[in-house]
Each structure stands twice: as C-alpha cells, then as structure tokens.
Image (tube, rainbow, N blue to C red; front, top):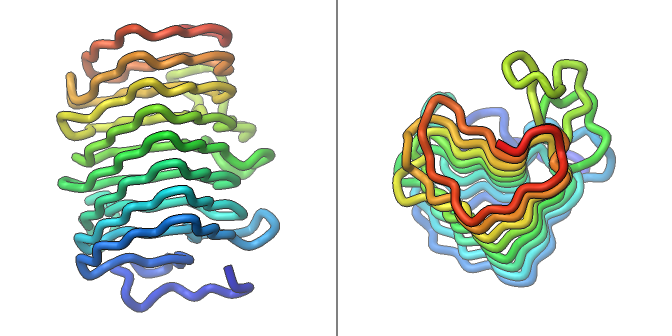
Amino acid sequence: APAVLKPSPFLPFPGRANIVDIFSEAKVGIKRLTITGPSGAICPGLAGIRIFDGSTLNLDYSTIKGCTREGMLVGLDPDIPNGPQVGHATVTNTEITEYRIVGIQAGGPDTIIILSRSSLVAAADTPEVDGQVGVVFSCGAQGIIKNNKVSGNICDHPDCGDDFENQAQGTAIFAAAAAWGSSISNNVISHNDLGIALALNSGCCEVDRNILKNNRFFGIAVIDSSHTISNTKISGGNVGV
C-alpha cells in the first residue's frame, strides 16, 4: 500500500480505502499476488480487497498481509450507508494475516463467499479492538467455509473476557443470519477466544467435521437459534459448546 491511500471515488461507502477495488459487475481472476498493507498498527478503514457492485473474484495462491482493518470485504451489510451491495468471491490456497478487525467479511443478500484450503491469522496485540473475527458472513450472505485454518482471534480489550453475556470475544468463524445452504466444515480452528458462533436463522448452516482446539473461552456458541453440529472434536478452553 502507498503511504497515503485515499478512498476510491467509485465506492458506495464514503470514507473507505481499499488497496484493490473490484466493481461494476467485473469478473476477475487473481493468482499468486501478494497484497501488503502499510507497516505499523495504524490502518483505519483500510481493506486489502473489496468486491462489490455485483462483481466476482476468484483468488488463488495469494497473500493478504500487513496492516489492514479487513483483509477482504465481499458485498456490504444492508445497515451500512448506501447498502446493500452484492459481491461473490471464491478464495483458495490463500493466506490472510495481520488483519486488525476481520479477515474476511461478507454481507448482504445474494452475496457469496467460498473459502477453502486457506489460512487466516489475526494481528496480535490489538488492545484497542474489542474482538477480532476471522470470517464473518451475515445479513443474508451465504458462506461455504471448508478445509481452512483459522487462529489468533484474541481480544485483549478491557471489555473482553469469558462472560458471554456481558463481554466480547474474538471469534474464528461467525455466521449471523446467514443464508440457507451455508456450511462450515473440515476446518481446524485454534487459539481464538471463541471458535464458531452461529446466530439467528435456525438451520441455515451445516456444521460438520471441524476440529476446535485450545480456543480460550468457548468452542462453539449457538445464539438465538437452533443448529445441528456433527462429527466435531472440541478440546481445551473453558467451555465446549
């Protein structure tokens, strides 16, 4: 990233700055590309890649690293100004590291994130942040999250801790009001505050054959909904489910 990266005039959400913008229904393939955020720990509003405006990205054997607020943004949550937006992303064999808030965030109806054979590791030492998330798909977005490794989503903010009702936690994979047909399977999830969180839209997501180990507070959390979790191994931490 350049030393100063101004928000793109093409963005529907003012104030954002992204290193790579994909928009206007473009269909893009990127392979063996490294995207690096600025050095240091100050990167407010910066994302590595943003896919929106009906566009599609196939990303393979690539890296997103360095200081970013989000490694990747796909679509846009309806509650964000000028939303919703739609994006589609298939991400394979890719490393996303050092993000300070979210590794991959997908939101909005008809938005799809397919993530496989990839690794996400959050930035360490982020006391100003009240909870990092590796992958979140919400507000009607569909997520297919399989065969990945997600770790390091730990919250050191004073408002974080093991009180599920009153404190925040860093979370590896979070599905919130996700679209039907979503799945979280065959992932190795370790050293987060919370492994998998499922909220709202009962039955939206197949959760199968995951390994959760040494997540600090909780393995899996089910919030205001009903879900089936199968063939899953949970070890370490304070609470399994």
